[in-house]
Each structure stands twice: as structure tokens, then as C-alpha cells.
Amino acid sequence: MTFSMPRPLNCPLIFLLARACHTFLSAAALLLASSVAAAAPERVISTGHSITELVLALGAGDSLIAVDSSTRLPADFKKVPVVGYYRQLPVEGMLAQRPQLLIGGEHMGPANTLTLLQNAGVKIVKLPEAENGEQLIANIDRLSRVLEKPAAELTKSVVQQLRALKRARSSLSEAPRILFVRAQEGRGLKAAGTGTSPDSLIRMAGGVNAVEFSGYKQLSDEALIELRPDWILFSSDQDAQLKGGAALLEWQPLLKLTPAGKKKAFFSVDGFALLGGMGLASLNEAKKLNEKFSRN
Image (cartoon, rainbow, N blue to C red; front, side):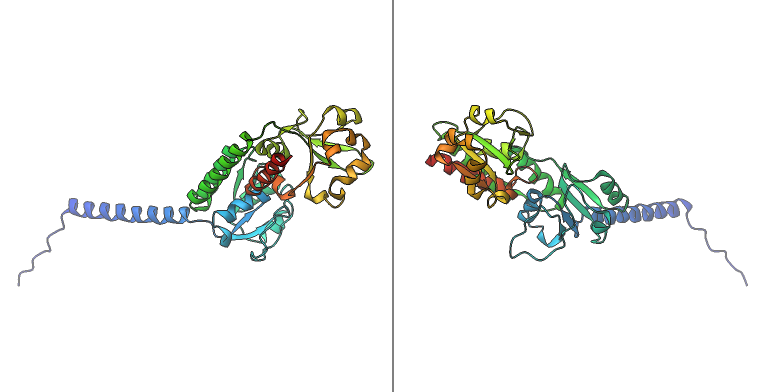
């Protein structure tokens, strides 16, 4: 009986088949990894009211698992845990929520908390505090990419509001002088200067900040008269304490000599519109404030 040996396979053919198989598997693995990396985060913590406003407006509310104490959620929104204040976030409280993504403003911290969260695999995204409409739109664009949510509708709405505010500012016969204050009985007044959220709001509404310094500074009695404010603004969290502005005239009688004091031209600004830079609430407050200017 004669036996024939099997004919050896063509070596080049084996090499080509193996190489093709390796290429296919590598491509499949890369595609899978890319799809995982591109998936929208499902567990998001947002800090700072203006940032959380944008998260919700972009339609990412279902992914929101916690917020900080500076955030005011809509009354009909689901109940979520409150994890500290955006400047003093607790590591344990944050990690207990098992977040994939933490979003906040540039002052979110402290730094060691953010480092520990990053080491635990949490992605950290910081957005600059918007001082004008262009920066607000830039924040919307960046956040939409981070959350994998379309931004066209929200951006269109914001652009329309900004254009309406621009028209409203141009219709004012004269830009009023505005003083935004924080006040306590027996401790005088602190005014908000440039680089603050109240300053951005004043400019957006068509006013001129009565002070030129940066940040918050204590005002002297002499300055109260020299600044000649047409309007005096304060945050809504002080509205009851300041009796709608009447207490300011009791604590600082010299204010009665200013245009604002004579007309009792006070305005309580929604405090949430002043947290974390310009946001959607800021546009609404600027509109209300401009309407006040137009009527007086």
C-alpha cells in the first residue's frame, strides 16, 4: 500500500490569513474602545447654579445624580443628593455617588479633592465663569460636547436673548449709574466692582457700575455721596434683612442724598443669577433690570 504525504500549505498564504485576522481583530477592538470612550456620561455631578442650569437646558437631567448647595433645581425635578458647596467639596460625599463626571466653574475645589477624584477615575471639567454673552455661548458649546448633547436649540435661544438685550440697552437715553451692595447693620456697605457677577449683570442690563475698583470693597461714608448711584441693587438673599432697601436708608442715612436714595430706587436681584458667572438666570435678571431702567 502506498501512502502519500499531505501537501504542505502555502506558507505565504498562512501569513496573509493570519495578518488579515490580526488586522480585523485590532480594528474591532479599536472600534469597541472608541464607542465606549465616546459614550455620554451616565452619572454626572454638577456644581454651581449657572453650570447646572446649562446641564438641564441641554437635556442631560437624566444623568444628573447630585448637585452642590449653590444650585437651585426646578420644583418638579427629581430629588438628588446635595454634596457640599462647590468651593469646599467633600471627597467621601462625592465618591459615595459613584460619579463618572464632575462639572463646575473655575473656582470649584479644593484642589486636593479634585486630585483624589481624578485618581479614582472621575473626569473633571472646569468651565470659566462667563462675564459676557460670548463666553456663555462658548460654555454651552463645550458642555454640549462633554455631555454629548446637541446645543443648537439652546444656543439659538441665548443668541436671541442677547440680541434683545442689546436692542434694549441701545434704547436707553442714558446709562444709569448702578451700585450693587452687600450690607449688614453696623458694618457699612461693601460694593461689587469689576470682575464680579453683579458687574457683568449691570453691564448686560445697560447700566454703568458706579465703582471702578475690582472685587468687593468697603465703602466710606464720603464715597456713598460721591458715587451718586441712580439705582442700588442687592441680592435676594438679603431682601428680607434689608426690608426691600428701606433698611439701607436707616443704616446709612447719607444714601438719602443720592439719586437712588431720593427715589428709593432699589432692586433685589435673584441671588442664583449671581452664582458662578453669567448663566441663563442672569439673562432673565438683566431683562428685568433693563425694564426698570426704561421706566425711570
